[in-house]
Structure formats: C-alpha cells, structure tokens
Image (cartoon, rainbow, N blue to C red):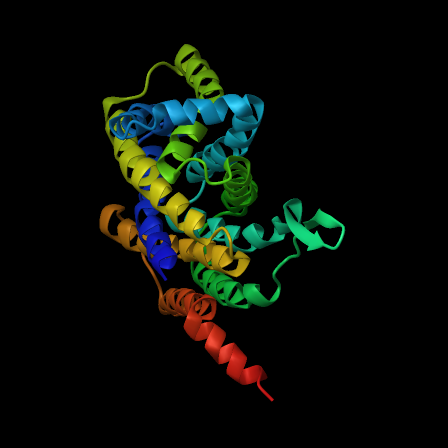
Length: 323
C-alpha cells in the first residue's frame, strides 16, 4: 500500500502540469517552451539533490554502461511523453488532456509483452515474454468508464478538431511514458534510485529540449517572464516531486506485475486533482452532475484497484476460489 500512496501523491503533483500548461497556453505561451523549460529547470534542481547525496558518480557510471539506450529510452519516456502533452494543452482544456492521458492505465498493461522474465528450467534459465495481465486490468476499466463519463459530460463544449489534436498526441504519450519508465528500470536493475534515474533520464532527453528551444528562440524569440515562472512551478511540482514519487512507487512494485499495474492506475487521480485545480484557477470551468458521477467512478476504481493488489485483495480471491 506504500507504493499506492506514493502513486496517489504523485498524481496530485502531476496535475500541476495539466493546469499550468493550459494557463500558459491561454496566455499565449508556446507549447515548445512549456515542454522544454520544464526539463531545463529540472536539471539543476535534480543535480543538486543527487550531488548532496553524493550519488552523482554512481549515476555517471551507470549511464556510461549503455549511453545510447539511456538517450533512446529517455527520449521515449520523457520526450515522447511531455512534448505531446504540452502540444495537446494548446488545443484542449486541462480536464480533456488529463482525462485522455488516463489511457496510460491500459497502455501500461498492453506494453507488458515487450518485456521478458527469466524462467528456471531443468536446463537452466531462459527468457520468456510476459503476458498481458487481463485479470488485473478489470479495475482499470472501471476507472476508464468513469473517465469516459466525465469526458462525455463535457464533450459538447469542444470542437472535433480540438478533440482530435488533444487525443492523438496524448495517446502517443500514454504509451511512451510507461514504456520508457519500465525499460529504464529494466536497464538499471536496481543499481540506482528513483532520484538518480530521474536525473539520468533528464540528461538523456536534453538533446531534444535543446533542439526545440533553439528552434523556438530563433523563430519566435524567448519565453515571457510569466511562462518562465509557471514553467518553474511545473518543474518543481510535476517534474521533480511527482516524478520522483512515481518512480519510487514503481521501484517498490517492480517485482509484482499486478502491483505495478495498480501503481500506474493511481495516476487516474490526476483527473480529479486537475478538475479541482481548473475549477479554482481557470475561469469558465464547469462540471455537470454527469461529470461528478464520472469522478465517483474514477475514485471507486482506484480504491478497488488498490484493494485487489493488496493482501486484502489476495485473501478475498483465495476465499472465492477455495473448494
């Protein structure tokens, strides 16, 4: 349950991205600056934390083992995750971006066959591909049902064009984030902690952020002071606090596939926290009765998912299958 708690707290801080990205977009800020500045601000913050703990040499040693894989999976896990997220914020309200992002709950399970476990046989160990945990995904569909209900309650206020430009990029991001995160866990094999891994992936994704920043600066000029400040808030809340909490949660659950799926399902809480933040900070945001029904389903799905992955859930399943 500790991993679940960390996951829920991470979803709270992650929600800052959705709300502030929309605020920056509404004030005329570029999605490219929103994406790039987050990681450029994250770099010194994470570096100071890792240096204070004297863990930077260990990180450099780990990255030197497979530098191209670090760059590749960092591009997937951070680049193909956050750039589409910011792009979508330019075309869709925060609640729609947050809601569509919850497809990552299913995406996290669908990418499972891309990973392997070691099976012990009389002739030694051999690699076998993992199977999609269909049984463990049951509560994920309850969460998604709630998201569909919420989005249906708001869909009439959004044009088809804006919906498509929001949904497609986030669909890409929803696969990229769990895939990049898990591939990095697999590559590191527990030799570094969550903070080190977050810094390493930030460093690995820097080429993308430098290229985007240079392009945006040469073509449109520097970001506004307001966007700089709001990007710093996102970097601290979502980039550092939320990412470290979430990576710590996935590290705790990495040896149990059902627990890992449950941790990733806690990110549906972003929808709840984003709606609350949007109602408080963005004028004109409204939620209907049907939307509240969807919120209840999301929370219910999160609770059931957590129980099914805990010892209580296992005991209930054992009793239900006992002769």
